[in-house]
Image (cartoon, rainbow, N blue to C red; front, top):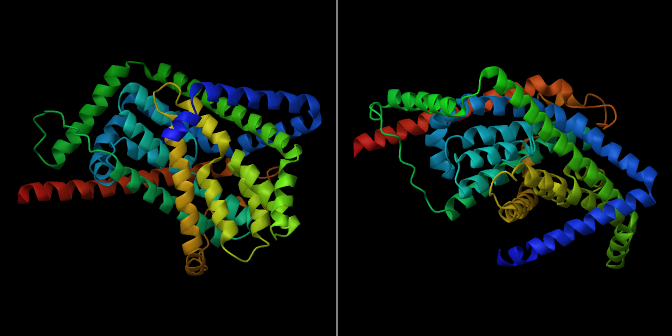
Length: 422
């Protein structure tokens, strides 16, 4: 961690960003047609995959945060989230948001909650790392059915993606020191479930009073803020698409492929793999598409392990989005970077170990969402999008919140029973 802090010092970061900006400008001047096409590709990704997946959830999250609903739900989720991850109950909404809408939906909410003081810095950084996910619609329908032409492979990638996230969350839980969070002193505190619900209602009222905006003002601010965040995300995606194309034209990929072929690998396969890894390093959607083309010709689990690694890494494009969306808070990027490396390593190892038995056991599964996304052979960025899937995604989000609430009620019951036994 100390080495990373030295590496990403303010001076080095400024130098790195300056070099990247210079490379971007040079590539646009030298290859204007290619730069335009690559930026258009980034725009298509944003409009067809990211915009429909994030817009409704960003608006709803900002609206409910201002109304105090998030804080009220946080009290209801508190027993489960404290037990599993040592996180406040409001983290339940953020985890469900990241799971359903995908990255970087959780980052915007975490940054605002940290700014409001709802989360400590340690809690915010841990929550940011476990809510930075790809949604199951993209993993199963787009990557699985569309790219790999296999719903089973997509479902296996989703299982590994979320299992590795759970392992990462547990790892961070045991690393962090427990922080006492005393419950507010109310008359209803010792009345079991009725006291729990009363505290939830009090938290809702307090947060609503502190915000103070009328519903019309809150709705307008929510829409404006969400659209601004989406334009920021779109700008990052377009910029990194152009930067990726500039690096591809530099000859570095061909040099890496030649080096790999000198070590005994097939040159064509090495070139395809190098291009896919480079794309995934910058942008997860493009990387997933490129690596899936390589995985179709391979017989081992290695291409799928590399795909899991790239999906967990998230790409520098989403890293820049997270950095921008959390700039309103004191959350550290280095902590997030370390969690991406850890998540990628865990996902890679899990895929290598469990791919064959997992795909065999899931061989007969055909997820319902797969039938919505890619009914024809191959998913296309030009012709397909996630717009038709907004309703199923909202239903999935509500279902996950309900499951978390049921589990939290069960955890609260266990705590209450254990307290009375003592």
